[in-house]
Amino acid sequence: MNYAECIEAARGRIGNYCKACNECNGRACGSQMPGPGSKGVGDTAKRNYDKWKEIRVQMDTISENRPVDTSLHLFGQSFKYPFFAGPVGAVQLHYGDCLNDISYNDILVSSCAEFGIAAFTGDGTDGNVMVAATEAIRKAGGPGIPTVKPWNIETIREKMKMVHESGAFAVAMDVDAAGLPFLKNLDPPAGSKTVEELHEVAQAAGVPFIVKGVMTAKGALKAKEAGASAIVVSNHRCICDHRIQSWRPCAGSVSGNCRSAGRHRACGGWLHEDLRGWWNPFGNRCL
Image 1 (tube, helix red, strand yellow):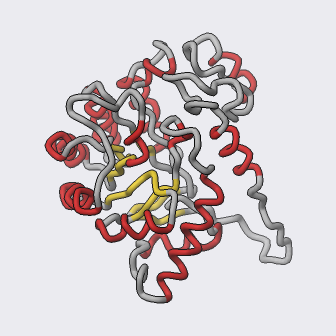
Image 2 (image 1 turned 90 degrees about the vertical axis):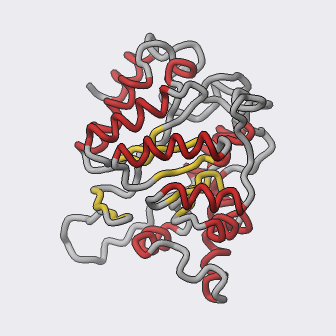
Image 3 (image 1 turned 180 degrees about the horizontal axis):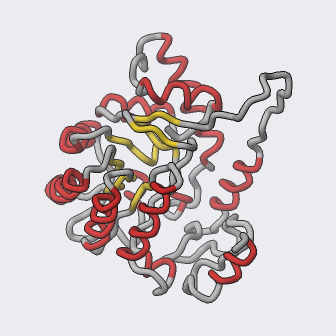
């Protein structure tokens, strides 16, 4: 099956919100929730995609004629490529009833492991989302990163138990989910975290802790202070607030300011040793 055939097959199975476009650029799915589109005026996913297209490979053919090494070494693990699958939770809510969280995560985690990368897995208002995600990681031998929503600390501790039992090599929290419409006013509540609260989460993690949803250098330094091992520059595709800047300028600002701060000991030693080589060549990588 080629890409065009894959997209065509998806259109009858992926629900009412995602349109299975040839280019996942946010233009057909904006201003609606649930689903993958941006909130409000619905233009931020478009801006994110347009910024991605500005990244170009710098060609240099004056080099040794040998296979290109795309491998990545991270938190004691080795991967074939320097990219991972992103977290998706509540699959049926957003993408129709063709797959549920159990079947989706079983396919996602095992397939990523088979082809040499790792999968971030999602969380959701249904507690079974995290159960399914961590079980899929456990069955695959641990090559996944569960992503926990910013619940209250009691709920987070319960979810961290599942993370530990799964054998996952790292865990993330998508703090950019704090403003998700379907997470607000829930019991237990999901919301923003202070540095102190995030530090408590990092301690409960027991494995390298990744903070997803950092969009400023100031936020990166706060994540460092809280004990994060790495960050992900992300605006959650702006399904939290449509006025947020697209990720690309923020990523450059975060990486540049943190490298500068590192020279003045404010950021020194924060980027995990395994991440330094991955961060610098691109200048804007999320980890």
